[in-house]
Length: 122
Image 1 (tube, rainbow, N blue to C red):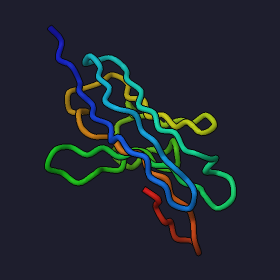
Image 2: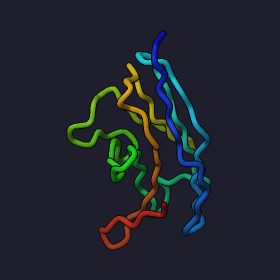
Image 3: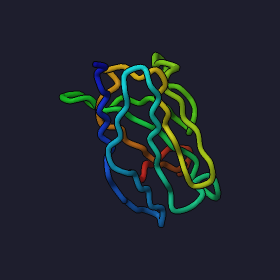
Image 4: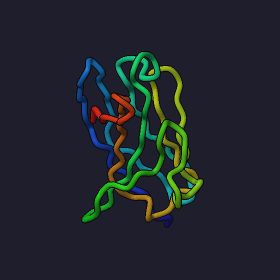
């Protein structure tokens, strides 16, 4: 029997500067399968001053690790099994060829640029 990947997704709805980010509940996948985790913003983050969308993975007892930044860019050292995409207000993290070590809590994060410094809303 194949092991299952259990992914906890932070369920949240936070707002600052009138932008709300919402994540759904948990998802799961068979090892070797593919899974997508979604996040929705209340407005287009690439309009006006907002300009950043990131994905993190936090494993038990560890600090969150940046996986994907600016929607679809891989952080150095992150497997290309992880990919990020967006369509309108929806942002998606896809994990292909799921492995047991992919289990954990996944967070999405928005941010914006003030005086050339990113300020994260969540």
